[in-house]
Image (cartoon, rainbow, N blue to C red; front, side, top):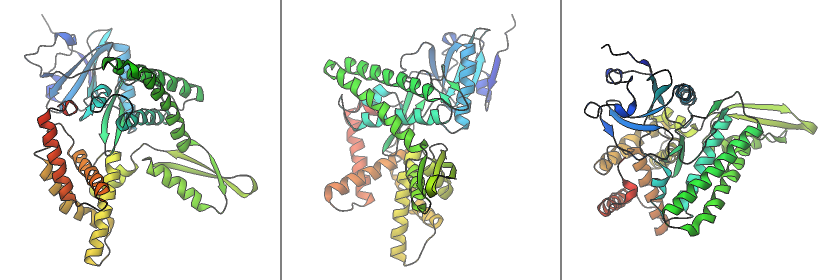
Length: 407
């Protein structure tokens, strides 16, 4: 009996991927031929399985063909625009009604339940970072004309990014692409997010046996709305400045860059009584990441780049004082990489697992350095901070911290 050749579409195909049994329902794929990996997944309407391949871990989701085809196109658009989302690898039609969507697995990522299991239930710095990440993700998507439609904690993955948390869209089943979104579309999408965040936090509190935190969960979800509008206005509001207040224009640009957004375009138009109307079009949130890549050639996350650039510039200033001469940023960057970053990454290698982000571990060392300096009331050198971080990781590993579960 002839085997039906699958209706298959792959980006960057490999012989391994081409050999998968795409015409077979996902639940029937042979475990003796496929390197499945068990990973926790949130509530899903569809079967999701993970496979370890030569190109890394991939996620496969079986869903209606029409939905899978639309989701593939949307995720491809998000990837091309540099927006925080998982990257699509391909789509395979099992039959006329059903298909398998293939995406890359986001390394070093966590679901909200596992992320918040690292800290005590209820209010706290990490939950605050998570809520801000959700609001920021929705602002980015809306600014790019993306209507999410089902934004929730369950449809999001979180990844530590320097001293912050970044959220990534992983489910675009109900998403839509538009040239721009109306205020009504944005408000409705935001309302869905607030309700779903409230449900997610309340469900987590109930699972932890903390019914006393249900009201707090609802109040925390409401803050997402305020965070969203504050950031949206910061990025999109049109302002008027005096004709001679060029500093106000530069300050607006710096503020947007500090938030991590690059400037795509600035429009300056004459206003009333000598005023200038200023409107800024922002690009994606990779301002510091682009600058760091330009200097070092390394691609890192935005929050990581912000911390690394500060460390690089601090080291460059120290070099200039020590050597009594000026250095370009490129020269400082090369010296910093060779004399600081690379030796530290080498020292961290036995501590950082294969699935972990070594650059994030370096950022964690910088955070340890800052905290210990605050406690001591003076600057602590990098090496003592590095040893303290490695020692703390060793203690955590021996204690079996659930927050460090290997994905």
